Length: 370
Image (cartoon, rainbow, N blue to C red):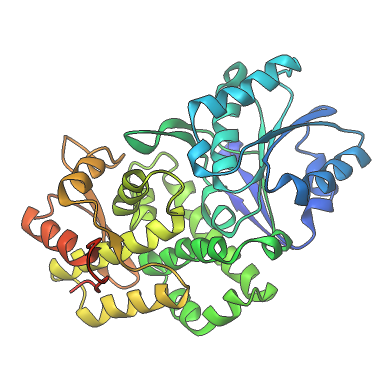
């Protein structure tokens, strides 16, 4: 097991990364103020890991109340959030009752938002079971739900007490979700760690084959970056916005296609290729750099061509992006491979060219950005 710390003064917390951690009661002891917890999970994860976690808690003399939600991004809504509140209120959970998020990014985001708002704040613990949630969404305190007009537009910054990333849970992850997680891993190399990007190029086959050592290293390196950025900019007023490389386009894809039709990581991959294309048009990176980025996503079995929603819809959805400031869209782009920048006032003609080049027509064969 390896441990990192997210440094936020009195709200600092550990990230434990290793195998078999769901059965390690010692990791939980100091984070449970009472003898009662609520576990929020979903219909996919519950049959796999809920009983194991409940047994661990029972050995500690802690009673657990499961709240099992339907699985999928389409359920990341106010209605599903109310299901959590209903269970907490029905069972008279108190401010000393922690919520444990056992699942992927959807479960983590909704559980965190419920914890931030139930009784004006109760403790919560992240136990991410997908690669994407282990390397990104479980760390940093971003919580929330989706709205029809935009992804993650309703939420709160609310930090967990503990993140416990059990690499063993990735053994049961579907191949497409493993690939979706790799999109966020690749992101860290592109925005701030060229040596890590080169390591990913050399070890992508091992990651896809679920080599435990390679996966643990990828999670550790990703979490190191996330922890550093969050400690420096908790509420995304500056550097943390760079973690959204590909997300402005990607969130538009998710919203435009209907939540759940594209996995988040799939949309981020296609969105990152669009951001790279726009970076090239700005004169910052070369066509060879764009090809290199596209090739790595393809090796991770991720899409590199975005759906053609139409330029108008893309602009409309991107206009609801959280990075919009003063009514103007801002984009995370690549000044060079391994270095990202936040750019406002992108020339509209260049943005239009990227949308036309990187989106596949429904009636035509997908083409590469050109």
